[in-house]
Length: 261
Image (cartoon, rainbow, N blue to C red; front, side, top):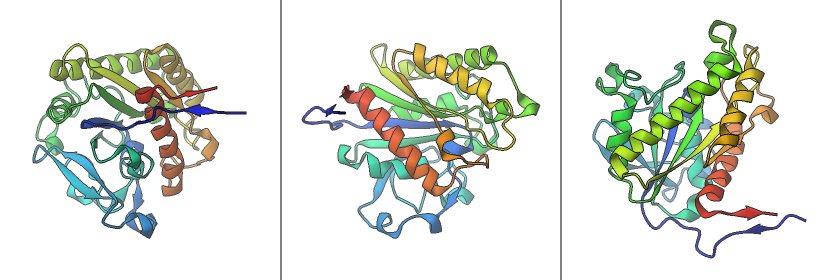
């Protein structure tokens, strides 16, 4: 028998950030029409960091899931929108920081990555640091969707190479958080495993690296995505619902030390 222990008050009392990072699956591809109507009502809002105005904005679920500042992407839904349903009991103190770029590889928190016109010439590290000014909690969460580039023949790398790149990305992310929040700030990581879509001939090597990084990290979890049997590189809305349940559960475990025996 499986039993789950949860603290009596598993709630955030202070504003805390969940960063969706790296490739396009962190952004989402499903259109608003795929979104259930019962999640489009006035009560289904989440807070999101807007880089263009440097503020937290309440956005309606299924209506606006921005990709940094690009207006043409406001009709998309993805994990950043879906997750509010599965963490809603934690109240409105969670906010999403969208830091992803379709087709990009590792490492967004290095000095040069994301330095292009879409984000006003600022790197993702600088954008993250601005967003964290709004955080009041002692923990930040990083959800990484990566490995697609390195799973395809044109960008294939070994398990050892990808493991080193991923470890460096997480270290750089933590450094960026500490610069703003101080040495005591905790960062927990959710690593989404790359799935065996049609072109991902090197996916097993990348998954091995992702699993190794999660196993060795002090506060990280690996989430398998292969059970979805998705043949395309991008997930569907229903896939996001399924995966986001798992992301939310991982965040609860890492934040509130929920134990399962």
